[in-house]
Length: 140
Image (cartoon, rainbow, N blue to C red; front, side, top):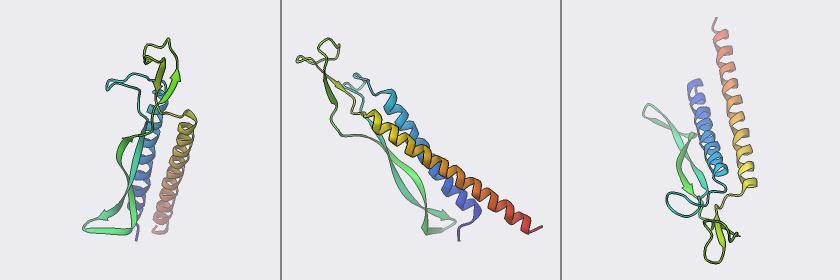
């Protein structure tokens, strides 16, 4: 059975994962026009990879309750966008500039999704707190 603190732990893990997603989206949007990085070439879009981790209490692992963890932040493998700008300092001999593989519309959708998921996590935490308070009132 899932206790109050376990439920809070599950909700908090979701909030943490969504915060990581929002941070990567913010990084992607901030670098949407970065044509030159320290590694050379344009910025590469980042994506968090989430992983389900069974909730462990003591020596017992739950098969039905899992936490969310960010397993990795990985680079998107899509090719950069080529834009013909012969006067740009990063243009190749044919006049093409490699811009990051960041689609601003896609990133805004990702940000809205992460924001809604974060709001749902906060709502669930509030519900858990309310239920815990009610349970304490019963014991009085």
